[in-house]
Length: 398
Image 1 (cartoon, rainbow, N blue to C red):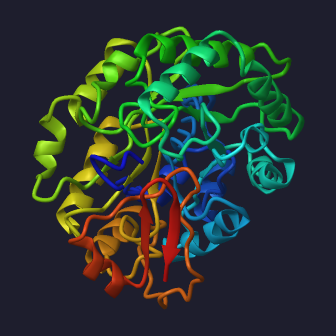
Image 2: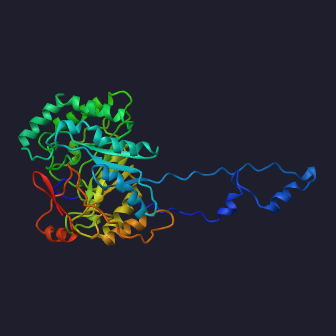
Image 3: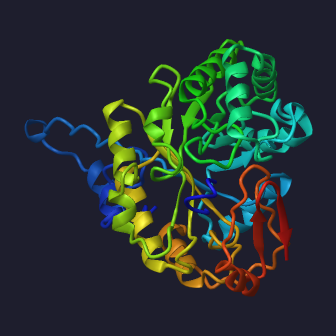
């Protein structure tokens, strides 16, 4: 997430009234005994009417794809079952993780890292695997603008092509050729080496080169998600957009910040939520919210209600809440009011059940996605039991 600006559906299931009456019209449903007897009674030929055509069953629309970031490694997969139980059986269709941005070998997709995620994705046809992909190694080392600019130009010239070809080949070999790739996320900030600001033209050329290389691998069906952080940040994200040919989804990472900003403010600010929706609509692209959640305004139930309503209205291809403190709802106990809103909105068809609070191991922030906390956050973070700090590196204090 973009450190300088922020840290980081309601899909009610309507139960059809008059089910028994409709069931009699759908082929294959039984009728009652009196109806069967009447059907066997002889009727004068002159009064027989042509049989009415059967009423076809209307298939239910699939539940919108949602999930949560729960941990970058295998624990992230394991914890999805617990979150689903907390949501009274609601199915998490999106698995979301991040490739470490420390070394090129990890950006190429270590098989031991990707295997468990690929296995989860292959279990069901309606699942979606979302993978954040850094565009540079040493992605969180705080390199200077001059060095970032030089690296972007080397990437634009093709020096790093081989790393992305190998990643594409590994994803195809693992049986997840339809992975959604959030490439170079939050490029409009200053956190990452893969930031756009030092040279927007080189950044766009480099993005297009990576996409072209990965699409050249046989069997791939990748979708590439261009995801800035909400707002202007260091540079307007529109200046980094690489073009409609190489972008399949236009995403946005958005958290409840800065302190004191209302949800309406988050909608209307320059390069905010409304501009994101409008920008994608103009280009005929679906939207997404790969990262979203609470932050500077604490346990904000109103933000949660408004963000879920926004998601419900604008129907992103997928969304994944960041579920660790201070952003989350299931694994962050201090956000109890917002958690109740989230749980009520997304629970399974019979509504939320009074399940016990989960006993959880500490949650690791994603390697490439740690949230900076200012001095005012220390007390709240300490009381919540977890805090993630980063300057040019990240660590955890529990």
